[in-house]
Each structure stands twice: as structure tokens, then as C-alpha cells.
Length: 304
Image (cartoon, rainbow, N blue to C red; front, side, top):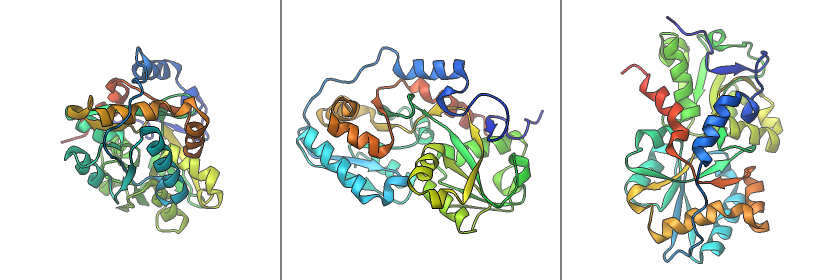
């Protein structure tokens, strides 16, 4: 039986539970329990060698002041040089992480579940009180439509083929309708950045797109003229926030342990809270891999 169009998302103008962590209470409690149960920040230790932290291309890519502030704060906390490593695609950063070329990386829940045997969670961001976020299906302001089926034949912008919110969620919904992105949309393309999806719609290059809801929310605050050229059509149920991960074989090494302690300790002092404020996050916590079970289920359910 085909799934109701838009199932798994909440319509922006439809009745139902509010978006975000205040939504489905049982789901939120289950995810919070998986993330926070019996876990605490690792003891504070100092790194003994320089640290590299890989970043996927999210909204902060263009914010040099923010990147410099993060590098400076973490370097001061750890007593070693901390370098943020950026690449154009998720795949490039993931390859560096799996090859041991970076100490850790801020990746997406989708590649984490695909490589769960090789990776361990180091820290998970807390956003609006929970380690959760949503995927948004957005449209250019002048393009009509209130649910997925209304966008058949349109031009759709995806963020990245390794992104949960920027590809997998919409791909899964279309599979529930018995179709694929190429079979449903008139044209699709990847922008390799959630901010770029918004830019593509604002420039008239795409009618609709799939993005990280956290990124869109921050853009709506920081760049209202840009985000204001798009609108949220519907939102997914809450999912585990994109984590910072490391190789499992290095989880107990001093540099990795030190980085984890520094991240989870950011909310404990004024300097750290300044960084969190720039990121629009509440903090970082330890988490159980079960936080990403819904993403794993979505991936496993796709036709082979």
C-alpha cells in the first residue's frame, strides 16, 4: 500500500503537534533517553598533539569569524593547535575521517549509520533543548504547493547524496509513493551545501529543495533576506542531530578524549557559551548510537 503523500512530515500549515522538540512527546522522550541516559562528559584532559576537526559544508562554511573563533577557543582549551578542515562534499570529509586523516569530524547521521562499525560518537549538539533536528522540505516563495505531490514535475535541489536531511528523507518519502527523485521531479541536482539549496531557490534555479532544518532556521535569523525568498512546506519528525564522530579505534586516545571533553565542556564557561551562541546551540553531550535508529531504518527500507 502506498504511503500517504508527505507521511513522516508535518505540514507547515496543518493541524497537529508543533514542530521541533515540543512535538511528539513519546518520540522525543525516547530519543532523549537514548541520547542522555547514564552518559556524562568525559573527564577533562589535555591533548598531546595537534588536532584536526573535519567539517561538512554547512552554513558556517562562509562565516570566517565563526570558524576562527572556534579554532581559537578549542586551541586554548586543549593547549595544542586545533585546525578546522573543510572540503566541498560530505564524501571528502568522511573519507578523511575513515582514513584517519582528521582527529574527528562533524558529519551527518546518514554516513554515521552506514559506517557505524568503524565510527564512534564523540559529541552530539543540543539544539533547542534536545540533541535533535528536523529535515525541511522548502519551496521558493512564489511556487505553490502544500504537500509533496504538489511538486511533481518541479525542479528540486538536494544538498548532498550523503546527507540525511538533504537527500535521504525525501528519497525515502518518494519510495513510499512508489517512485524515485528522477521519476517524480522534472529535474534534480545537488548543491553540496544546505545554504546553497536556499540560494538556488532564491535565484530561481530550483522550485523546491531538501535541507537541514537547523541550517534553515539559522539562515532565517542571520540572513532573513535570503531565507525569506523560500518557505517551509513541511518538516520531518525529530531525528538525531548531526554528530561529531571519530574512528572507534581512536576513541580512547588522548587527543580524541581531550577534544570530546572540550566540546562537552563548552557550556560550562562564558567563552564556551559565546561559541555556542554563535552556533545557535545549547551545548554538546555524549549520546548512544540508538539516537540514529530512525535514520538507519529509513536507509534500510529503501529499494536496493
